[in-house]
Image 1 (cartoon, rainbow, N blue to C red):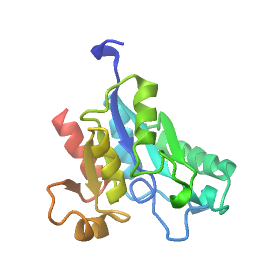
Image 2 (cartoon, rainbow, N blue to C red):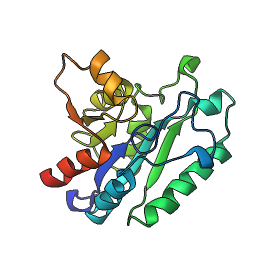
Image 3 (tube, one colour):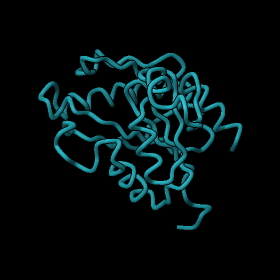
Image 4 (cartoon, rainbow, N blue to C red):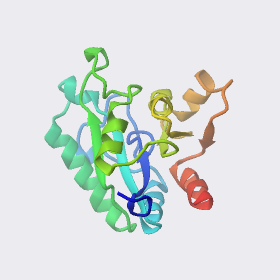
Length: 185
């Protein structure tokens, strides 16, 4: 694949970045609620030719709190809502494992990101990875991507606890991060 035919790729975390998060997990489509401005931000990315992917830990599956069918219903709802904003998520990669399962796909491990890079045939060097937690940024750093933290979801806590002494790119929300990406492009 030539450089001209490779997609402008961005990888997003889901809970706390695109939609509200919950300590009780988002278990059903009716619990999935987009954060303000997030769907519009994804729509703007798509309209500017970006390929949007999601990499998300979904340990609620491994814990028996919801099923893969429930997860797909959440993503179908997200895609329907994105249509009215001119956007779509090209692919969703998720880790269904619990934290103690020892897999290589649960962030901060980089397995999901490597799968995405392999699917699109791209190096992940410099690819923006936007999330609301330390583990999102650690996975991005492990593959040489561009880690971006948002203050939504767990982002404010992550800044206080993990990033107060580190130089990391931080934005108020997904829309502000997208503004920066589109300005840089």
